[in-house]
Image 1 (cartoon, rainbow, N blue to C red):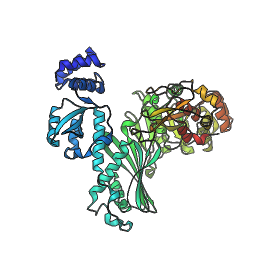
Image 2 (image 1 turned 45 degrees about the vertical axis):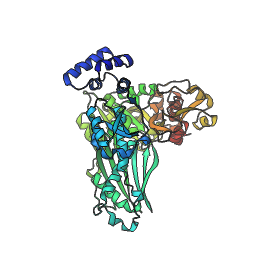
Image 3 (image 1 turned 60 degrees about the horizontal axis):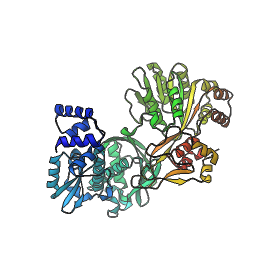
Image 4 (image 1 turned 135 degrees about the vertical axis):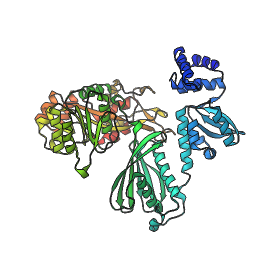
Length: 578
């Protein structure tokens, strides 16, 4: 490649500036290698722009995205996966007498020559980004690995489970590959949980993606014991114990990501049920601005978390993102001048610069005992995973009144319900009123897939299902709280977005989730009602009067911003309807 002609194209057709080019050339002189490598290493311009320009210069094809179904997976049989990942190359399909090969490094002449030898055919390079190439490599090899199909193996009677136990079975390699492919598929599809459930005739595997369960695959009932034993071995559990529940942990690097998996087993009438919770360390959101809060909520939350003392409570059901919100708040105030301690059950993600302790009931390390111990370590900020009893609540309140900022969670349906929950624990009303700064209720709703999002008209019946009048819905369309998706415009009046379904979202119409929030500030009016032990509904009405947005109202604004659908908001907030 003639670098002078490439630089001409880059300066003319991309965002590369002369100064950034000079920096890359200087880096190339120092470290060697190619100009393209130096440009990427110095982040002089996005990889996609660079590859497009190189494709234009070399007369090659550039593919920003390729449908996985178009790949001939048989072509990878002679190509080791480590080689493919190291050189970022993947054979796609045969074209006349040649093979098209996807690559992210067109300067890799040696790799192209190796591919000619391995495939026994001429190679036609096709360019794409390294992220896309790596994703397709992982998916292609996973498909080849899972070619062993337990569903289609010969019938194995449920009465002979011990004969196929992984300890004695000579057929353990297929079991290992099957379980590995199961985990990889869940990671690839961004699932949060895998459920392996023994049935009467089959083992059913389901996973939870964006909060909704889908069936993934099935296996013959006779392999249930082998599957269970394999997962137990991976998670360090006792494979001989099948009568009692067990908890374990698996740590693996999958498709370039560090994945922590929490494993729980439970005996059932038809065998052991296994649940695997996947925790992707690279996906944890550590910024309040990125979890779906409107600008008004962000302003109020920032005021709370910058306070020197008091309690912030986050409420919602299991799986509503409470821990993620607290992690984001902790990360935002995590500076060298603050001593931050947490006690959790369990520690889901490890945060740099924060001392995290896990509850252990076997040695009497509970939320209350851990919290009491923390007060002897001169903390500035304390996070308690959950306030479950009066003892923990009283210690947390005393900590807040003696100059500590305390974060914790409660299981209630809405923000005012947090007050009632503390009262039910027999906490004195004056202590609640004087210590609590604010209560944040939240839910997670699925976001519309940007690839297949389309407009559709909204009906009055749908608006009424949100607990709003059509006039309130139209007024809401004119408000902007700063959380609309920049990839598409806000829908016009009388219209909303919906996802039609595509390969990107697995035909669900949704990809990812975002929070909807209800933040009740403990202002003078609300504090007075708490002291009078007022009814929860009366407290909620007063909070709304002074500016609190309810969960459904916040959800409606996200619908009008094109982020989610009416069906989603109604699905996760129907318990809050009054």
